[in-house]
Image (cartoon, rainbow, N blue to C red):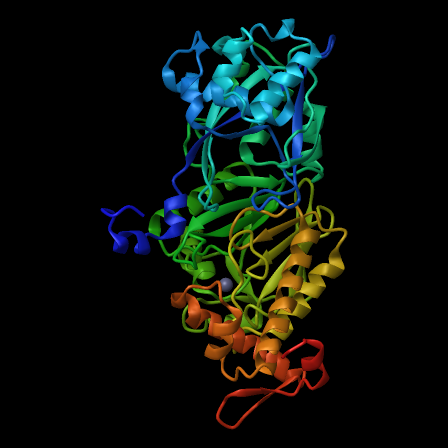
Length: 529
Ligand SMILES: [Zn+2]
């Protein structure tokens, strides 16, 4: 921090908000045409399982704009900004797949191309220096503008991404060179759409749009078709169909940071249900109502509003949507959720564990309800076996962490619910949580959640064995990475763990409310000095 920067401003700047401004990025839709085939092949790559955002999704190469991009000359560019974004696209494509779309690159041997790449990745030379050194130049005519898409606000890391279509130079072959991707391949655009339709590959909205456009073949109209939807002009992406029949519709809500939105889901190809219309804000309620109307105009029928649990950020828009639909639509939830909502939101039908909600349509979907308490007592999850989609509510989220706050929250129940999710593996292909993007790596995510809770429990028991007797004392020892203002919430989480340890007879609660270890041998195993 510099001396003239106010320390108060720096300290009070909310971290999530600062990150939420979309950053410039570029991506390349790399295509190649084969003789006699109308539809081109595209090169797509699967994002690594460990990537925090959209891990396991199929995507195009690309990345954030850097300082040198504006300094890279691009011939025939309409303006300086487009030139910088083309330079960014070309550089990212070269770094991530080893493909250099530059005039003059045809004259380089494979060995020369490899050393150009080595000079770039080892930072011996910048991209513009390299191009000049090898007598190469970028030309805007090699990069067809295919739209600007902004990451929906359910992610704290957002990009304003410029997409460009580029033909793969004949003598070059793409290969995955970045840890961001675990594998990549050529696939015909129609086949890629087919894999998405079979719930066999998950993609973000701009990728799905590109695949659909290219499925119609590369023609003079291709560029116009890319730009034919408002989302391709940096307009907000509201309907996110990560998987056919499952529309994620993030709504702005007063929820727990870092999340700023709660996901509503519209599920079904014919009959459809609306899960968790949770926004209290009129503009957001209107946006959701418009989406419901759009689906109805496509011939689908809204059948029921379903609630995963009673928290305000999941139910605050129920009455507005009910009114919008002429009060005919029923609201369904678990009996315990209905009890928590008594006097606030009317629940018309109870859903029990094992109930199946059949949604007619092409294809039909069948949602099996699971009573999965832990975050709340009446928490429901839904599993669709044919597609492998698991709607996890707030038990597993794509962003932030899950709060277990007693007496409503119970770590014991929560772990049992996570175990039920685990038992559904390996059939699960995607997790749809109450916040953040969908998770295409269900096994890794479920195991990570279970391991995280067990580690927390071990650390808390360790602290009690070492003499910490109250939640504040335990937080001071275990949650060393948590800022003081979050301690009250951490103490609730510790209390939830202590209640489980008490039920497991590993700690005992004293008359004054403090806790002592009953772990005996377990304390020894924990290696407490
Ligand atoms: Zn919740």
